[in-house]
Image (tube, rainbow over all chains, first blue to last red; front, top):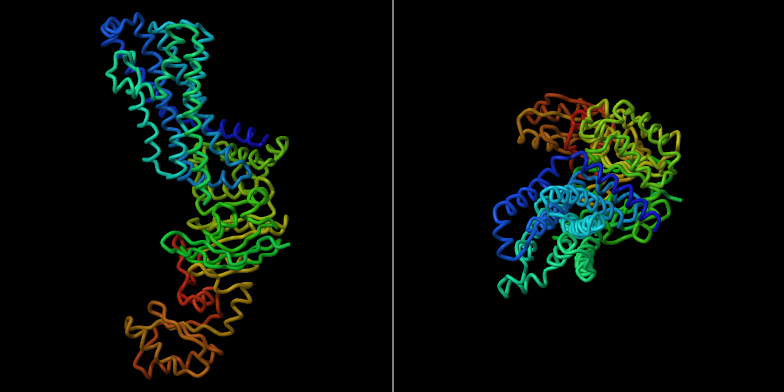
Length: 254
Length: 330
């Protein structure tokens, strides 16, 4: 058990070193959500705010940008794994006595830290743009932890696909899945304004609760029920994606 | 205790591909074992099963006394492996990669720095230790890969085609490290190769693998002696038809053991080569044929390979540099 922890730690450090040495990959993960954030708030912020009765549309949009950045970074988690598989380095790791779970967990934990770092940058940009933070510094920290936990859970999709297929193209599906999930959530308007079919889809979409949990921290203040719903959604997503990772890891040695 | 023991080891892939078809192995400790075969003969699949990367379809195998299926973790702790492609992380430096390997192999933290420095010195990579691996040449990457396989001082090291594609100097360097470690520290090596010279010069024992089966096994000297013949190679003028006719003609020679046709040559195995040459040339002449070149040699591993498999061993990469005698003129 102790080796599962220490080996995960050294592999996390290795994943982070890899990220630091390829900064260009993160530029897109920061630029795209910031661009969407600026354009949406700038173009329809006033109108949407009035139409939906939202005083602070910048604050309403900031968690969307955070989630977008997190999903962008987590969606590419599988690519690093595919590169390891293609290079043969994953085999080298598989040949060590490190517990199998650490081989995936090290990369996932590295992605968790990476996504929290990106989320911090977006959060700071949002604060600079006037989003505010109703729950103050503690709320910002909780928001970042939620972002990191979501990133960790979400990267499981890409990592599982990478382990199973070893294919670069397939591993990028992890990122594409996020877009329908985001647009089927109350990303741009409260779901009370949705058509009934869309409201139903938003209600069963886990991203809705993660987004609302983060949004309440920014706009409303501490809401235990909202935070609990976000955490349950992340736990459910993590349970699903980590099961996929475990199955894919097993199939690697068949 | 044997370092490697296998009985009926088998790996089948979908579509009835029999990559490894029931092989037996018994490799003693302290030995350099050469696993010789062409591309696709099943060498790498065997290594992947013995190193726990692949589950056998059937049969049993134990490595250093541990069953590869029941105790893969115990096997992994005790072996070092450098696979066919030097599986390295381009973004790390050589020193970082070795340090990470040392930590994953439970080398005590206080010993890691000294061990990494020692390995970098052994494989002549001290000057490049803090450069990223993507700047290393192919030979440097292979040497680093070998160092990574040795980081925890394993008693058994699997090297899967460690010199394929390397220039002669890098190849000699790898051979030197293997010999030194075997002699000085008693490390057992399981070495796959498609280079006859490599098997001949390094291995105490050799197994020849062909289409998933072991077709011959023994020391290089014993394998060569098993042919108990001289090898006369006749390069024939007159194209494929001439070569076929020449093979027919030399079959009339008394004292003939075997005849093989390879490209533009007829390879004749005879009891007494020095006395046979004249008679063979005469037989060709009677058939209206002429030999462009006649050579006489003692049997090589290539001849063993040819006799056992019916074809020459053709290495895929750099073979000419490694094995200039592949045409039977040694």
